[in-house]
Amino acid sequence: MIDDKPLRLVIASKTVVAEDICEFTLASMDGGSLPEFDPGAHVTIETPHGSSRRYSLINAGVAPNKYVIAVKKELNSRGGSRSMHDNLQAGSEISVWPPENSFPLADASRYLFIAGGIGITPILAMANHCVETGQEFDIIYCARSAESAAYHETIASQFGDRVIIHLDGGDPEKAYDFWDWFVTPSNVHVYCCGPKPLMEEVKAVSGHWPSKNIHFEDFKPVEAVGQDAEAFEVRLTSTGQTFQVEGNQSILETLRSGGVRVPSSCESGSCGSCRMKLVSGKVIHRDFVLTSSEYASALMVCVSRGDGLIEIDFES
Image 1: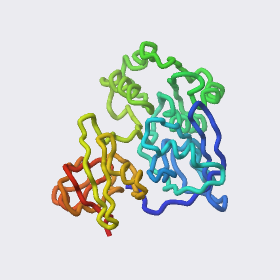
Image 2: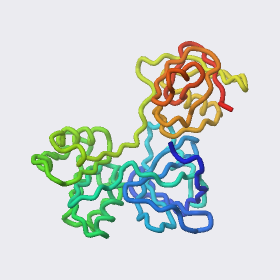
Image 3: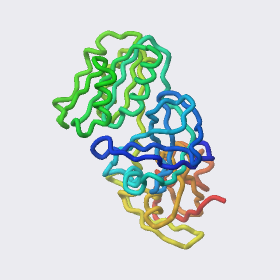
Image 4: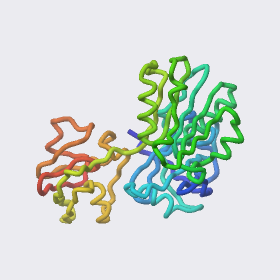
């Protein structure tokens, strides 16, 4: 669970760094220092859409006076990244929770960094840290095209023969073959961040390695709906508003579309940020937070669904 006291920061700059990818530099309102962080850390941001999203920090974390992130505009997402691109400009103010690190850099003699697309962001921070500390590393950066590969020119010039940039044109038949790097297990620590197919491939080829040497980061939310999901109604008792939750929408998305602001973070039923009170009705619980004794009185609106009309409200 993220800290409940966010920082209020300002967008110092916004720069396009690749196709559908913008870099945002965040600073304190008075230009002062910000909480420190280690390579691999991320911040959680309340997007203009109202949802919270986690973004890896690119810059160095020692005595920082800024946070630098890169955001890919996901056209098929729930709206968080689109609102970052469409609604934020230099001078905009946003709420940002202090850095956390679920992808810390372990102490090792050598590293293999593997990135796919926007997954380059934590990898870039780690590689820069290794340069500063004199640690050995290699980078494999996979992307569809040069236009969609953020920072590829910077990475190529900074890291030289330590980096492989592989562009597959979106053709699965031209995907990078990682096997030669994993044939023989070693003391190398592998850090991988990117889309699901890339991470599944790395998991497959590293299955015979010690699990402590293989590290993954994936911020993609778990989908709360499926092809067989049925529509139902939800009533907000404090206002009397009734909403139709379609099969391809969550309660959270439906409420937000109706102008009801609901806090959230993970949107996968694992953090508890979107908990609401269950007043009446039958709920299909899909979260990992509530105990069975709480099922009759609460629900997580990011993933749970109703069977018929359910009545809910904000918890006091």
